[in-house]
Image (cartoon, rainbow, N blue to C red; front, side, top):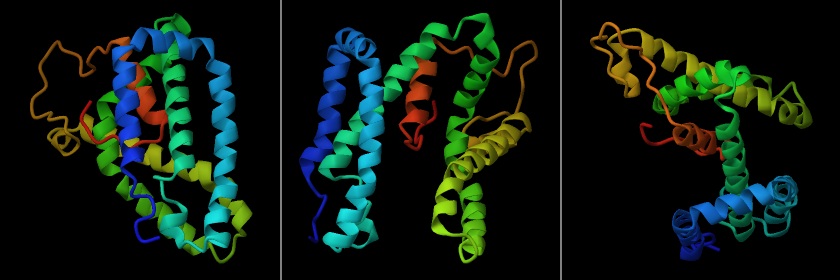
Length: 218
């Protein structure tokens, strides 16, 4: 089991599917819209299946934590594909409604967050360290099921703190360079916000909902 998960086909799957979507984008887009709710349902069911998968790996196969949680398992490959399809579906829906008046405030938040995305990627370490210290402290007092319930709040805490740090750097020269947004000089008469197309906003949603860390400056 030394090389468990080192299967080149699991890596190539995403490249092949990505290339297929790029070549047949319009057809795939229609298919996703047609079967949107089936995709959502499959994603939820597959997510529940990760729990028995972990128990099987840890209790029956006696894998240590790294192998038990390995992302490059056949089941996780299928689950990840479903998550990506769900993210694309949500993004397409958002692209349709983003120009409506009632969505303008949220659209502004998305545009700003897309500008801060690289900074969020860089600064997330700080809130993660704080969260780790907090969980280490309360771990001996709080049962596991309560920690599980607290998990979504922990994720929101990390995102919110990283967002605020990045926003502060974005607004205060010359700290913008720390998040990949140099702001040594601000030109008069120009807004700090860059207009984004619906495609850019959709890509941002894909990155958020697929739970992938953003490693490039959008």
